[in-house]
Image 1 (cartoon, helix red, strand yellow):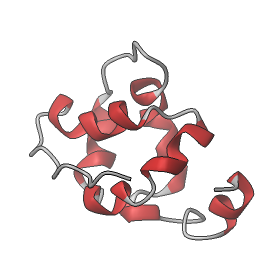
Image 2 (image 1 turned 180 degrees about the vertical axis):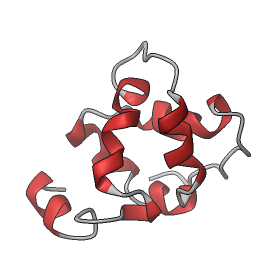
Image 3 (image 1 turned 30 degrees about the vertical axis):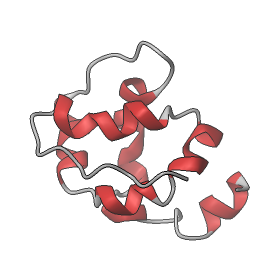
Length: 89
C-alpha cells in the first residue's frame, strides 16, 4: 500500500475513528521493538478507535513506522477491552 494513497484515501481524516491529527500522540507507543508506554492522550484516542477496522490496515502500518503488534496491544496497555484477534493476512 502506498503512503500517499493512504494519506489521501481512507486515512485522510479519521481512519477507524482515529483523528489523524491525534495519531502522533500514540507513535512512541507503537514504533520499534521496545516502545514506550502509551500516554494518557494516546489512550484517550485509542478508547474511541475501531480496532477491528485497524485489522484491515495492519499490513500497511509498517509503511508509517508502526509495529502492528504494538498497535494492536495498545488497548490492553491502556486498560481497555482487548481487541479481537485480527484474521491472518
